[in-house]
Each structure stands twice: as C-alpha cells, then as structure tokens.
Amino acid sequence: MAVQSPPATRETATGQRAGRPVWLVVLAIYSLVLGIITAIPQFYYVLFALGLVTIGPHSNPLGEVWYAYILNGDNSYQHVDPGILAGAIEDAFLLGPLYAATGVGLLQRRAWVVPVGLMTGAMIFYAIVGFFLGDIFAGLNTVTNGVSYWVSNLPYLIYPLWLIPTLLLRRGLFSRRGASA
Image (cartoon, rainbow, N blue to C red; front, side, top):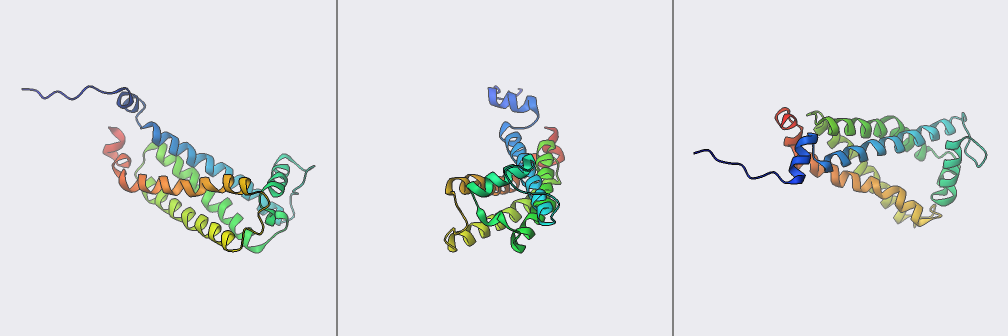
C-alpha cells in the first residue's frame, strides 16, 4: 500500500516552485541592501577623510546625502575622527562586502554561506551593540535627531538577530541535499 503525501499548500507549492522560501529571499535581499547602503557611503567617508571628496549641500549627490545625514542624525561625522574613520574602513572594505556575499550565498543556498554568514552576523552584532552602548552611555551627545539615528541603525541590530538563528537552526537549507530539494 502506497503512502500518500499530504496535499501541498499554496505556500509550500510556491516555495518549492521558486526553489527557496520567500522569507529566505527577503533575508537575502535585506543582506544585499545592507551591503550597498553600508559599503558605498562608508567608502565615500573614507574618501572624504583623505580629502578627495566633499560633504556639503552643493557637492555631488553622495556628499549631499552625507550632509543631510549629518544635519538630521549624527553630527560626529562633520569632522574626521580616527575612530569613525576606522569604522568606515571596516564597513567599506569588510562588512559591506560580507553583507553582499552573504546575500548571494543565501539566494543560491550555498553551504559556504553558513560560516560566512555567521561571521558577518557576529561581527555586526558586536559592532552595533558596542555602538549603541557607547552612544547611550555617553548620553547620545552627538545625536541631533533621535528618529534618524534609530531608523538608520536598528536594521543593523535586526539583521544578525534574524540571520544567525536562520543559519544555525535551518542549516539544512544550505547543504547540497537541501539546495536541490
């Protein structure tokens, strides 16, 4: 006697048709977006620190975005600070590319995304918690607009809280067998 499998739900059928769950695609896109919005502006700040570009209302579009951020969020970016520059270098050349690589690995459901994603998630969790605690214990003295500050920083706290459990608890999605199923 043959055992019949239960009928597929719309969500299951859609997930099987696409080859990956919708929530995983959203996490991958989230990772790719974080890579773009992290690497490009922080690379711009590195160029600013080197005196190669300007930040201001009548500079290029990225300089204008930085200027708007300074006025509406965190005014510590008005001058080159060694600690901020070190963070910008890390974001531009390490975390930004890691977000992008993690996003690609999640989309392709590759086994290598587990160690790369865990490293990415752990690094940003450590960095953002240290960033928040440092700012909070300093009394948020550089923050000129609390809404802008929290809206621009909370995605970096949410990301590892979603990514790390996904990679640890759903590891089977990223094996050869899981990727072909």
